[in-house]
Amino acid sequence: RDLLGRERAELLVEACTSTIAHYAFEPEHGLHKGDVLLSLLRTLGRDGRSVRAVEIGVSHAENTDFLLRHSVDIAAYFGVDPYLDREDALEVAQSVYKRYPQAELLRETSAEALSRFD
Image 1 (cartoon, rainbow, N blue to C red):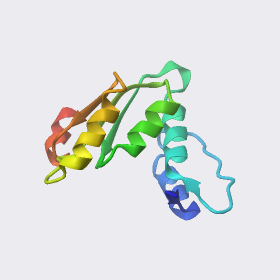
Image 2: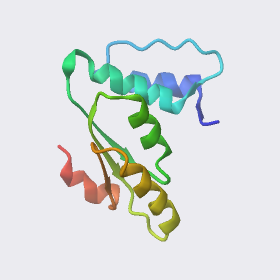
Image 3: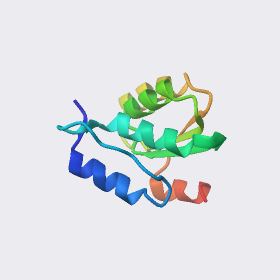
Image 4: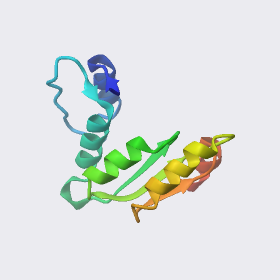
């Protein structure tokens, strides 16, 4: 299981408090990372706001698939991964990204992709 410990999850949310008003943590033994990210994205999309997300380090696109399968509020989703010598992971990720019209896979380093986003 991909768990994000309670302490790390609380730090993640604390870092986002300038954007997100409140997020309550109840589970005693941590949260699934995808659930935390999904909640943060849904909170950002409240009141009809358009949400654009960028994922750095996509690998096999498990997070991408989880988030886009469970959220209709994401207007644009960009995955950034150069896939250096990782053709097998690239093929899997490309098949996931093809399923979602709002998703775009950028085969770049994070430094290269930075200029695309303001």
